[in-house]
Image 1 (cartoon, helix red, strand yellow):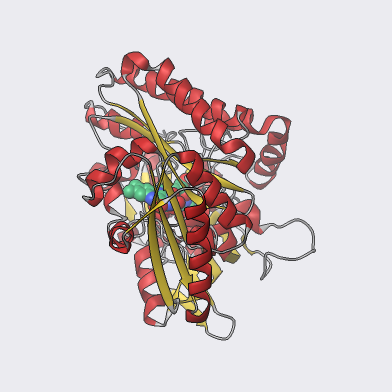
Image 2 (spheres, helix red, strand yellow; image 1 turned 120 degrees about the vertical axis):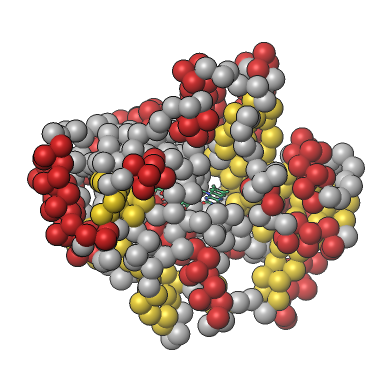
Length: 481
Ligand SMILES: Cc1cc2nc3c(=O)[nH]c(=O)nc-3n(C[C@H](O)[C@H](O)[C@H](O)COP(=O)(O)OP(=O)(O)OC[C@H]3O[C@@H](n4cnc5c(N)ncnc54)[C@H](O)[C@@H]3O)c2cc1C
C-alpha cells in the first residue's frame, strides 16, 4: 500500500466522510475483519499465520456516507469490502488486496412496516435475529430463518442469495426481496423498480441479489413479510433408504402440498449426527422431518396427504416428539460441540439439480470423493433441505479428520477437494453453489461454471466498476485495476 504519509492523508478523508469515531486503523480492530467461516483463513490462523487485513475499517451511518467512501476509494484505487455479520462461509469479506472494509452494522433501522401491503422496508446492516424479533412482535415473520440468524445481516442474506430452514414454503431470500437501494461502485445511489415482477426490461434487482458486493453495496431493502402461521406442525419418518425418501419428497412437491420443511438425511448422517445431536435412537435408514405452516382448516388435509405419500414409499413414522426435537435443536447442528470445527478439514458444498439427476449426483460425488481421498479417510454425508416443484438442493459436506499440518499442503488439499467436488456437481447437472455464494473460495471456478456466458457478468462488472474496486478477487473477477 501507499507510504505512511499518504495513508494518513486518506485516513483524514475517510474521517471527514464518516466521522473520527467511525474509522478504525489499529491492528487489534482490523484483525476481526480478516476472517469469516471459510476454512482456509481459519486454518491460516490456526497454523500461526496472519490473514490479509483491511487497511481501514469504516462504519458509515447511511447510504450517503457510503457513497462518499466509495468515491474516495475510486480516486485512490483502493478496494472496498462490504462487511455484514462476517458469518459467510466463502471468504467473501476477506480483504485479499487490503483496502477499506465497510462495516454496515450502523445501518440497522426498520424504516417502515407496511401493514396493508404486508411488506417491510429496512436498512441492510440489521442483524437477522433483531429483524425477525421486531417482526414477530408485530405478528409477522420474514420467514427467512438461516442457522446463522443470530450473526448474519439482511444485506448478507441478499448478497449471498441465502436460504432459511423454511425456504421450501416461503422461498429463498431472492423470492422474498421486492426492491433494493444500492450504492454503485462509482458512488451513485440507485433504487431498483418497486417490484421484481415486471416486463420493463430485464430485472436490475437480480444483478445485486447474489453479487456479494461485486456490483455495489446494498443499503436498504423492501421485502414481503408473512403473518405468523396459525398452526405449525412437524412429523418425522424413517425411510429404508435415501432413494425412497427422495421419491416421497418429490411427490409431495409435485402435488403442491406446500410443506414448510422437508429435511431428508442420508444414511450416514442419520446414523451419526441425528442420533448423536438429537439424542434419539433411530434404526438404520434415512431420517426425514416434514413441516407444515398452515391455516387450521387446511393443515389436516395437507399433512394427512403427505403422511400417506411417505407411508406409500415404505416410511416408518416416528413419534411427533422426535420431529419437534429436531425443530427445537435445529441450531445445535451448527454450533459447538456439534459444529464441524478444527482440527477437522471440512466444507459444505451445497448444490442443486432437477429431480431426474439428484440421485446420480449424490452417489457420483460420494464415490468420487471417498475413493479419490481414501488415504485421507474423507467422509461424505448429506441432507436435502430446500425443495422446489422441479428439483432439490443437496446440502452435502466432507470431513477430513487428519488434514496436513503444513498450511501450504493443507491449502492444496482443500482446494483440490473443492475442485473435484464442484466439477462433479457441474458434470452431473448441478451448480457451483445453491445458497452460500462464491466468495474467494469458489472464485476460480466461476468461469468454468458459466463458460462463454461469464462475459455477461464480466461486461457488467467492467461498466459498473471500471477500476474494479468492489470486493476484488471474488466471484472470478480478478484484482483491482
Ligand atoms: C453457523 C453458520 C450457519 C449458517 N447457516 C446458513 C443458513 O442456514 N443459510 C444460509 O443461507 N447461510 C448460512 N450460513 C452462511 C452465512 O451466514 C450466510 O451466507 C449469510 O447470509 C451471510 O451474512 P453476513 O451478514 O454474515 O455476510 P458477510 O459474511 O458479512 O458477507 C458475505 C458476503 O456478502 C457481502 N455483503 C455483506 N453485506 C453486504 C451488503 N449490504 N451489500 C453488498 N454486499 C454485502 C460481503 O462483502 C461478502 O462478500 C451459515 C454460516 C454459519 C457460520
